[in-house]
Image 1 (tube, one colour):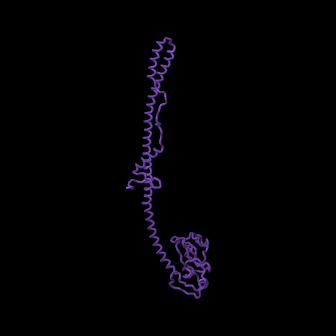
Image 2 (tube, helix red, strand yellow):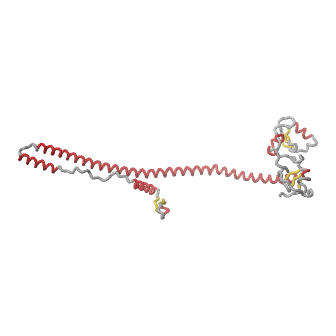
Image 3 (cartoon, helix red, strand yellow):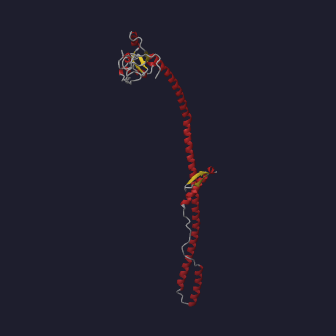
Length: 313
């Protein structure tokens, strides 16, 4: 509760109604006429001044007339170009009794009129409005100073975020993207190298096998020709009736058949082109791991983890 510098006692206390802290009433609905400050209330000319007590706006000439009246010449008139429009929304009259505020209730923290003193705020401690206004102005000055300090801090922080942190985010992200790209390329290169090795192995084996095949094929064709010739000679020999001639000719053909005798069984060969997928994957993984100076380490639970060699020393 703020300290009341000039308290005014009004007698016995009565129950306090919870009302708006500033106006001493429930939150009011401000009329359109109170908020309309763009035109003079008397002549509809563009408004230049605003009277807080009348809650009205005036042009230059109507302001002169306003200030001449005995009942209004002491009113507070402000220049509309030098005031926050928000401040014009505040009412200067008690909405309960339609009377001007005269006191500030330090018990309820409300502005009140003369009739409030003898009704809802009877027996409460009161102080003059000027004292409260001065206190609020001192607080406002402190608030302005604090806000200015905070604004300066936030401004520096924003500048730092834009000039340093934003650049760091971009740089960090770009570095990560580059690392990912380079790592992926290195992995692809290791796999490609293993692929080339495996392809070369198969191609070399194929060339060797083709040479062996052509050699065997040529031999089989030669034997085929020899056997065919012997077969035809034997058939012709069967037409020879002279025994001595038959015997000598047969013996000669028999020697030729023995010289050319060769098995016609299927060629025996190893499965040269078998591809061990598991072994290939293992070799590729090992190549990648070695390329990054890492190694695979088995754990007690049977799983395998990658570790950098420097972490194992």
